[in-house]
Image 1 (cartoon, rainbow, N blue to C red):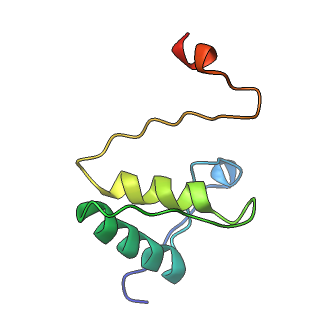
Image 2 (tube, rainbow, N blue to C red; image 1 turned 90 degrees about the horizontal axis):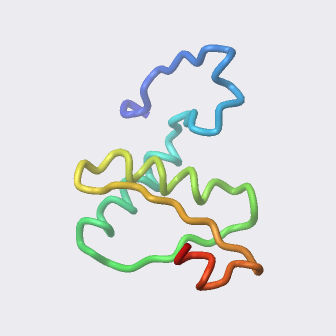
Length: 85
């Protein structure tokens, strides 16, 4: 609990998708993912839609100085040619 910072969120930022509220659980997840990334261990994040998989990974990667984030979204209609364009 001592590691969870006090955070004041401006009302206009509440709906911002990049706003992350740090909790005990998000800190736990971040610690585990950071250790796996630093050890170069592969992992898969599983969970139902809306459970915070992307948010957790984004928060973790932002905390590590040696990583840059690039997100590419795929769907059933994504083709190799579309990616190359």
